[in-house]
Length: 420
Ligand SMILES: Cc1ncc(COP(=O)(O)O)c(C=O)c1O
Image 1: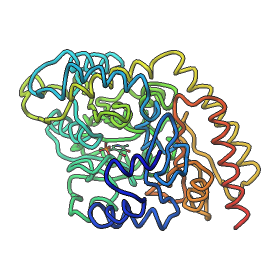
Image 2: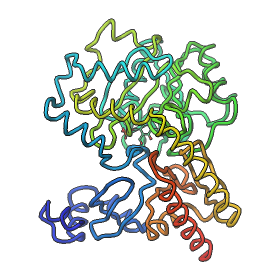
Image 3: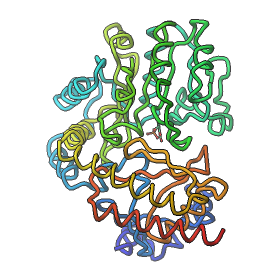
Image 4: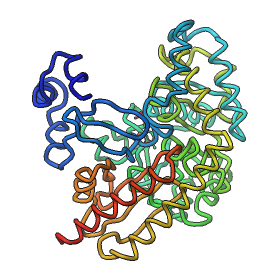
């Protein structure tokens, strides 16, 4: 299997790929994964399985943050894409098209409070659109986000995130971007009190920070503080949306109707990049005034629109929703058992549906990540809280597949615990 992936590009060994990756692609990142015990060079992929070009097979519960919610090369999505390419291409971004109009309508209708959809090709781009729209609507510049936030690496998005990513590129702008601790409503209220903030941007469960869950009433309190100060609430659902918590979007279950909702990653089914900022009436005015104010050649590419419409259809099917509910319960039971067995290693579980962070306290998540990889499961540590392993099972996993993941996790955690 892996051999075909190698020969397609003229390589005869994995070592050659790694040498070129080091030399021409990203030396630091290439070395990092070798050193951390995840020497993955993905070859074949299908369903929730990945095969390294050296033949090592793993079940993917990283899913690139939800990009592969519906699996790798989901057959229905592959068919949709290959059918679409018989007739359309990326399209001309200046004109309305049936695929673009239909996806916009479908997204707006599925999102209470939304009025218009602006398309991009990445989450960061859609976050930038959301922030620009809020600035347009309020005439204000300041943006508030949470400490350890991560909303992408584009111009405005990176400035809302942790300095870990913005400072290297001189992209932190302290005068315009304020950060307050997550779950601290007083700090948020104080930050908004001057009535000079255009928007608060929040992930319902901050992913890169290790999925700390919002305390009851916190997000509703933030929304109320926004309403009282003329600030817009942007829900970043790039990781938490698209069915992962049992609902299409997780923020509504917290009692919040956002002014803007951002989606990306899984929207393109892992096959064609597409993202969207769904603007409510408070933020969509610029589209009436100046439709050329934001442009992106690949934004709302027609091939991506075709795939995304199918992604929404599959995600909203009752069988998919039922499956997600069953998997949520199955995973919760398995994790609770493991936590009871090894409480000094698996020190806590953060779970909102299939958005899950596993806390490994002093052990840290990296040794577990490496052992899991050896056991045949790929899950990533949280960059901004390395004690937490991100654990994101797919929406279409079967019961036996989920049992297999839990069994491998148990083996890995036991091994790490035994080695202290
Ligand atoms: C919550 C969140 N928002 C935005 C982004 C940015 O998405 P992209 O990498 O497609 O720009 C990410 C990426 O991981 C994310 O996790």
